Length: 62
Image (cartoon, rainbow, N blue to C red; front, top):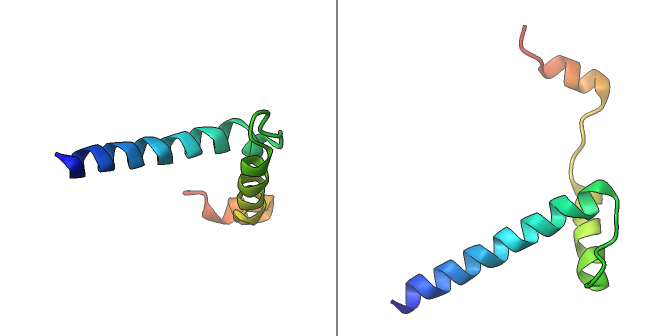
């Protein structure tokens, strides 16, 4: 029973971080309530790989 509770809480925490990432740093905005978390997520958004337009054309299916 304890394992299920820990697994549920950890999955909720990860889901909350994903929601914060998509809602704020991914769009270039600051997290209003937690500036330190916004900085961490902003660094993750800057480190994420991005495809250029010419690279995206190479990956399209024909």
